[in-house]
Length: 405
Image (cartoon, rainbow, N blue to C red; front, side, top):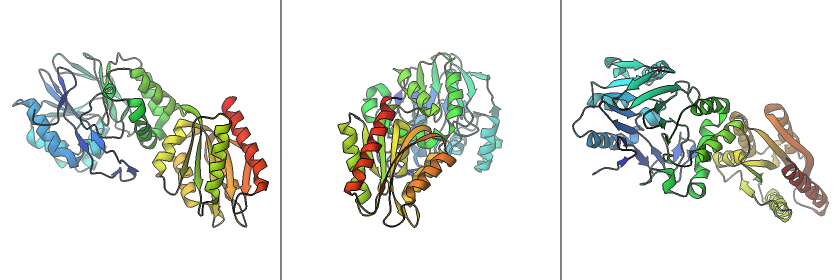
């Protein structure tokens, strides 16, 4: 084949494309390793394309489809999700395959019109809902509604013949595929899980209860393979990624460990964060990570907050308030509905250290099911001998909360 096409099964082809030019996913989340836009073409008595791609790689998609079809027509275009990075090529597909029937939920068609896909009503449309199905010949496609995972119109499609779940944005990941197709072709737990977590927590994380609902539906299906719209396909060890999604969507930490995000203007608050980290390791805590909130994109902080059980917030006071970068991180945490974590607080202020009280108030009043330890460290400009007892007390309390949870 001339193009970047891989066989998923005897009848199913990956016809999507990679994007290494995009710097920010959704114009907010850094993707230094790129991202893939996945699209799948089923070749049966009838042919069916499962979702399209972002406009930027539409040419790749069109060439891939033409090569796989090899002169055949495209009978169905099945749209599971209407976010523009997956539906950008819809009109181009319909221009080239005017007899193609478009299959989607009623709300998805509403979004097509909102996105000014003006030609959509010139084509045959098939509105489907939960429990409907479509026969392609040997393959039968069942449709399962998955609202708010993570848009209202989302559905997933299930090939009952081969047990393939076309899962829309669920079970996806950042990182371009670059020749990879299946999760078992890489060391996923070493090289991919951090970006899969960052993808889920920042894109879908707010909608945990809806993800739980879809997981319950998925548990009733004999799934043998998961084909997401970003990242590799799952054909082995499905329990691994399903367990991750179960924990993330319940807001349960994966690991007993400590995240220390710090806001430091001149290095003094950072010094305290480093001292605390050293003492935690001395106490036997093996997973401790530090991040400067000023130089770390918040998407990474959010992913680590979902991963770890304990967070020590270290912030200077800035204009009698929380340091802006730290406040932004806290507000993102709230926006994404994070809960069930234990916090400790370190504050700094040369004449009016207020950030500690404000952070604790935010956690108590703005968020749900957050535990704030009583032990606190208050600095006046820089670390002093007088702070050491409070630091030891804070470390001891954090260690106790981890060991006794």
